[in-house]
Image 1 (cartoon, one colour):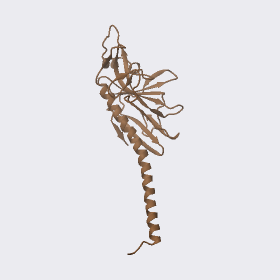
Image 2: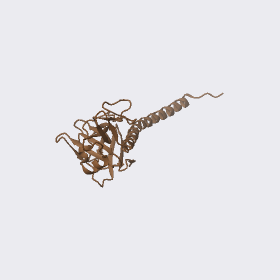
Image 3: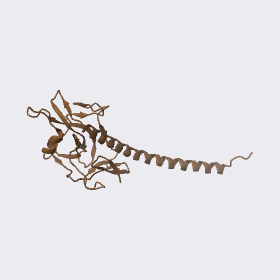
Image 4: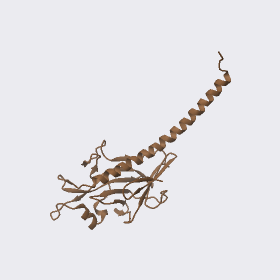
Length: 231
């Protein structure tokens, strides 16, 4: 019976080491890209959720308000053009004696959207089961935080550039659907003026998001129907 020589054993060991090294490199690459794709997948699902919620009007008997908008608030990182992530909220419309049951679509058509559907911090949090609460239920609330490992990591949003070279830098961004069949709205809050601004023109087509996590990047766009398309 012929035994392996020392040289043959060394060659085999070297091949095994090389294969393990390649495998680890690909695993590290996949882990970072999987994280970015998972964040995007969750965002797409949450956009679908708020769109579904916007098909119905809800009334809160305790506070005597209607909820006519459902959205996501993106909060900006300090001294940066990057955003921390988002949390779901419901925009309320107070009732009055002459309008006890406001029709959300009429309100959106006749008044400024920035007056109706905005919130600097959510008064009403939106949970994945459709429940609306004054305090977030951590296990249920629509929420996603972008993980930052290095200062160069980012979540950027742009209305004009696919690579987010001209990214938005408002303190808060509200991405929201209004009831019952409204298009997406994007509203930006500026602390210096204490005002919200409608950032999407009536003929807008795409909203661009750019993610960078460590040395991996993922860019995609959101169209008017809320679909996410990679490019």
